[in-house]
Length: 129
Image (tube, rainbow, N blue to C red; front, side, top):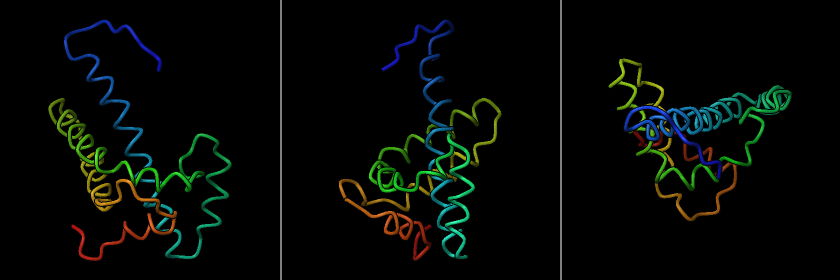
């Protein structure tokens, strides 16, 4: 925990939380989608090699996707909240809404021990919105 004292109006803490969440959660969902696409085209090894050269990239940590899937039940609503906050400030909400839709594909993964492949498979469209 890294407590911070914020200056600013009421709502500053919520704004900070949403700003950080918009990057943190969306980037993890995007990395999972990128790995799924790479796997479909047989280039997942190359993608992983590229990603691992960037030490701060979630693309370099596909073992984390099952954890993201297990948390998606609470992250999807948070991403919708991020989208609302972005829209209220005249900013594009598409990435946040898109991340929520990706996280929705992991509905039902709460408490499950998925493999990386199982987590990625749940992203596929089979009847999903």
